[in-house]
Image (tube, rainbow, N blue to C red; front, side, top):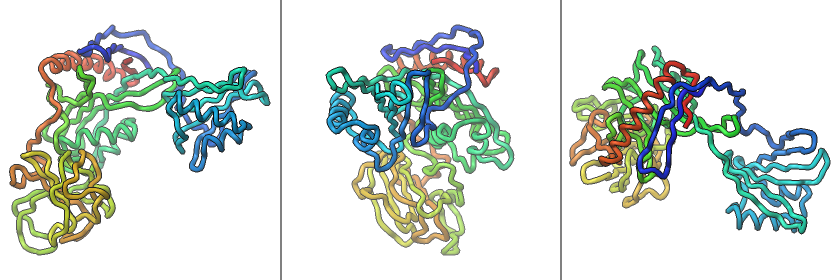
Length: 421
């Protein structure tokens, strides 16, 4: 991989100042080794004088249980637990997340250090002094963040997920892209063969090893209604949002498709033959195929104003988002716990689960958008953006976007390169 540009950012600055130093010399990198993969207990011999053993914390493990296994006394365990609480804010271990590294002087020597590893970006080193007191030293690991570029094309018969995977975009990044683009497009109806897309996202390294992926920084998709492009940008107040190329908020107050990658089985229509009743009447929403039990998230932030059952909708929830918009979710198999009339919900919060209650031929979600008391097509209605930029931030954003676009041009020419942040 080659480093082609450098972008320097300052969190304390009121504007994001970026500069491009031109094409840098090729940097040869070692083979990436992903953090983790130690198994339940792994032995790592580093040099000839120390031995490292790494333990993955699993269900049922406690700090006392693990430390006892490695020969520590009750007094030592109590001392370690106390210093972790007081000096590192660690009150216990988390199964399938935390690791503990034991370092010995020699193959069979005494323990010289214990390291609690709560994340790839933090280590808590425990050492015992000559008086037998245990001390801890929390260490935050510096991230080496690099922006990488992936581009792809929808082929005949492709889903966006399949095309994105083929382009080398990690599953977690694809999920984030879905969430972003769902504000603008319908992945069932808007995806066609020949469409091109690209994603710029963060990869985080430490000591030359890739640790994990960060956030989506830029996403571009040639949708049916035109190119959709979003940039991630940190404002002067340190809040982060996504914006279109002109600096307008890209995150809308409502999502067009509450369920990612769900197939549309029936569109909004003023005249549709009802599959159960058999006569023609308006279909005031959009139906998404979803197996029974599929979690249904709220399309936007708001307050639950109705929750109940009727013959047509079956189990349904209605949410008021502001003085203009409401959404309705029907045919639910059940409601989410603690979601009742009056409950304030966040965008993306699970409110119920798909089913086939009411007049339904099979499990699905019926989704309605009501604007000023009138039903509108969720796929075409103009939705208001949130978190727009003020004049000063907009000017700074446009400078940032211009510099970033120039740097990305280098990635387009050499997709194996990266931008150093």
